[in-house]
Structure formats: C-alpha cells, structure tokens
Amino acid sequence: MNKELIVVCNGGSLRNFDFKSIDRDKYSILITGKAFRYFRKNRIDYDYYCCVDDAVSKSCEWEICREIKQKNIKCLLTVTAGWSVETVKIFHKNNHKIGFLEDLKKKENNAFSQLEDKYTTGSSAILFGMFLEYKKINILGLDNDYVNTGNVRTRPDGKREIFKDLVGNPNYFFDNYERTGDVKNAPNNIENLHTDSIIKAIDIADVNNIELINYNNKKSFSDNIKTLPLNKFHK
Image 1 (cartoon, one colour):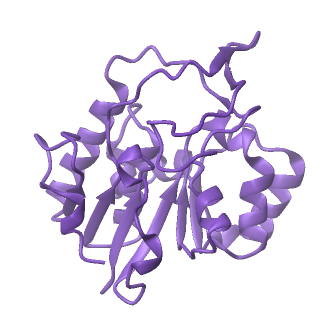
Image 2 (cartoon, rainbow, N blue to C red; image 1 turned 120 degrees about the vertical axis):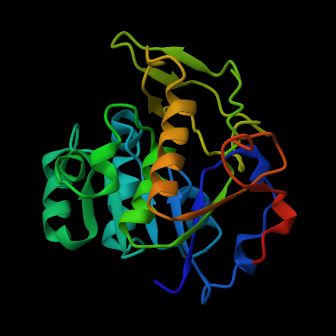
Image 3 (cartoon, helix red, strand yellow; image 1 turned 60 degrees about the vertical axis):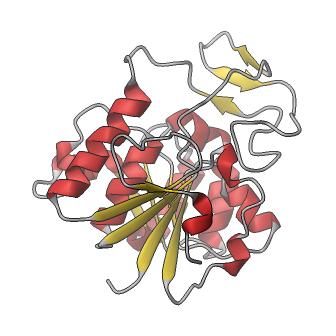
C-alpha cells in the first residue's frame, strides 16, 4: 500500500482543521463515530468508516445506510448487534464493503485476534488500518481528555441520550457531532478501557512494524506513541 492512512478520531483538537487541503493522492482517510456528518455537510470525500459502539451505530443507522448506498464508503468496520432487517439486507447487498469486528476477532493471524475484550472504536480503527495493509498510519484528534458536558440523560434502558445540542462542545471537532436524540451506551465498568485499548493497539502495531504518528497539541498518548504538533502534519 503506497498511500498513507489518516485516522480521524474526532477530538476537539481538530476544530477548524482544513480537511479539504489534504492531498488525496498521498493519503486515504478513515473516519470514525459520527464524523460522516461533518464530511457529508462539507462535501469532503473519505474512504473508510469505523464504529464498533452498537448503541451509536444503531442511533445513526439510517445515516450509515445512506453513506453505504450512496457509495461514500469503500469499506466499513462495525459490530453485528442491533441492526434492523432492512439494514442487514443493505449489508448483504454490499457484502464486499462490510467487516464485522466479531468475525475478524475469530480469525487467526490478524491484528484483531490479539485485541481480546478491551476494544473501542479508536483502537479498532488503528487495527482496521493495519488490516487494510497500510504501513504508515497518521492519527488525528486522539485527545483522550473527554469532559462531562451535562447534556446527557440516562434512559430507562440504561443507555444515555443527548437532550440538548451544544455549541462549541469541547469533546468534538465540530458542532452537531452529537444531536438531540442521539443515543450512546452507558459508561462501561472496565477501568481505563479507552486508554488501555489504545495502548494495546499501539503495541500490536509496533510488533507488526506499522509506523504510527499521533498529531496532537495536547498530551494525548505522547508517553506511548510518537507525537508531533498538529501543524507538523504535512497535508
């Protein structure tokens, strides 16, 4: 794979980042979570999509299906749980584009088989890049400094729901990343899950001789991975 991969992790450090100036002959782009809202609104092409949070995927189901049907996604990584019958039909029709985390974890000799049960969308995106055979992966927006913004309430089923739109949400690089009515899982009970899963993915990449560079002006994972200021990223 001659191109390098960019993994977009959605942190607030990317606010006002100029994605349109990226040299698409040099880089492929893998987006995560709800970043397709930004890329779609701003008419920016991307290549791959990753979200392994079943509640987030279900909440954005029709949007994800639209991205698939309109051929905005070359390939996506998701999980098997929670999809409607209609969505499963779309997946079957586009089978060459869809990868399920549960299936990849069962296969030997790939990065996902080493991930065990500590996985997040961010760590899965890094390993997805390896699975796609990229040898250099550039990580943007991996801030690791989530703060409680007070616009989430717990539903009777235990999941959390956004009840108010925020302008300037510090956790994300664009407004309306989260919208009123969006649903996400309750906080998990695995201590340090997000941090540990990223470190695990970094270790797996290192063993497999994958070059990872984290571009971030915050501390982020600078103790674990080569980290440069965001303005050092050569678009």
